[in-house]
Length: 151
Image: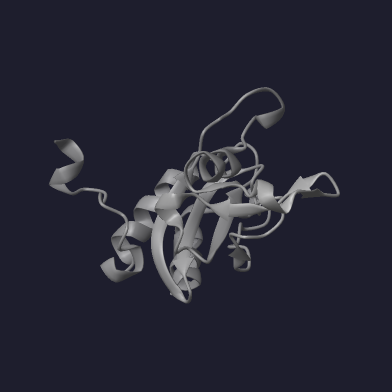
């Protein structure tokens, strides 16, 4: 369903001249060695417990310096993942693990936008939150257009 809805979003909002249509990465274990898929781009991410999607997030910060437009990586590293220091570093890359709040998360998927198109990431997030069944985003406490967003 995620891929179908994403395809519908891009049919509405992506022009051929923008380049290849962004796609969701394959499932990536949150206990993997870096780098985070699309970590160097702005976009969205989906967290899963087994086969069940539980949270849709946005990583659209602009960043600066060498981390310019690294919205997905910045968001995941700040709120979802941390380095598992007990596993050390191999080939200059650390191993990730979920932060305590997300311990049950098994894997994630990301979709990154090319440079200059990160402004579409919040629109994709809003479109998906309004289109997916609530069970698919059970950990999202606020939904676009809900009264709770304006309290």
